[in-house]
Image (cartoon, rainbow, N blue to C red; front, side, top):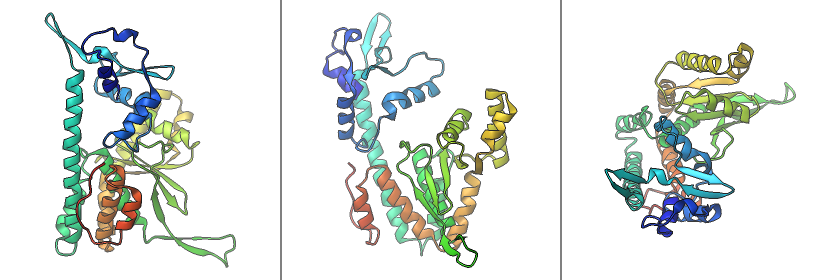
Length: 326
C-alpha cells in the first residue's frame, strides 16, 4: 500500500519524498481491504509487525521499512533506492511486480493445498496412511506458521473431543460436559495472546514458533497472569524448551521471584512430538476424516478462500468444484 502511494506521487520519477506529508492511515487501510488476502487484515503490520519482522531478519540494519508519525505513514526511501556505482536505481515498481507475482504463486499453492485436502478427505477410508502422512508433514518445523496453528487446532480439538468433566455446586447434582476447543480467530489476529479457548475449563492456548521470552511474558501479562498453555513449533524436548525459557527470563530480569511468577503461569508446553502423539490418539478414535475437514474449514477462513458463512454451509455437503480466492 505504501509503495503504491509512493508511485502514485511519481516519486520514483523524481521529486523530494522527504517533504511529502505522508499517507493517511484510513486510505491505506481501505486499499488493504481491496487487495488479495487483505480483506480481513487489521492494523498490526502498519504499526509494528512489519518493522519487527524486518529487524528480526536484518538485525544489523538501523532502518525501518515503515515510518509513522501523527497517523501519517511513509515507506523508507533508503530501502527502495539503491546506488550502484554512480547510478541510482529506484526499486518501487519492481517491488510491486514482485508482490503481484508472490500473490499469484501463493494463491496457486493454496488452491493446490485445498484440492489435495479434498482428495484425501475422499480417500480417508481407502488410504488412511497417505492422509496421516500428509497431516504429520504439516507439523514439520519448517512449515508455514499459519498452517501449523490450523493443524494444531484440528488435532487438539479432536484429542479433547471425547474427554468429559463434571461440574456442579452440589455433589448430588453434577452435570457431565465434554471438553470443547474453540479457535479465537485468524492467526496474527488481535486476540490478546489467546489462540484457542477450551470450554468449560476455561483453558487458554497460545501457538508460537519462537522462544522469545519477551513475547511469552507479554502474552502472560495480557491475560493478567492467568495460566496459559503454549503450543510450540519445535521438536525439542519439553523440558529443554521450559529450561530455555527460564534461562532467558533470568537473563532478562535477574530476579528469581519475578521469573518464578511468570514460569508458574505456563500451564503446559505442547511441542511437535506431543502433537504427533495426540494426532495418533485421535486417529485411533476414528477422527481422521473430521481432523481433515477441520483443516480445510479453518484454512479457508484463514486465507479468505471463502466467507465463513459459505464454509458453514459446506460442512454437510459433498466436496464440489473449486472456489475462487478473494
